Image (cartoon, rainbow, N blue to C red):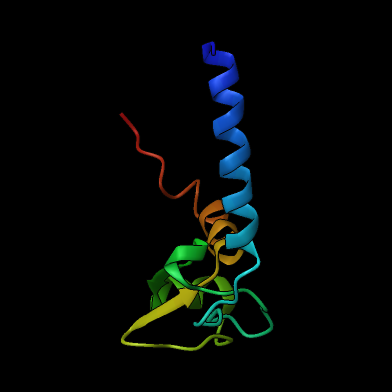
Length: 90
């Protein structure tokens, strides 16, 4: 068996694992009001500071331990909006 055949075989097994993981239900809902995503770390969720969440969504979020748990899509939208602020000047 060549390296391409082994690669194809490993891809098929990993695709099956991804399909089963995407169908599982999350435990922690996203802290942003109106969002239906899950903020579990296994599903790509993150936590951001309360100040950053206020800058992005105003007062429409849930706070836990001075952090706001957000789903992957909300985190990505927050990250894109702050991309210009994070650039360093050399």
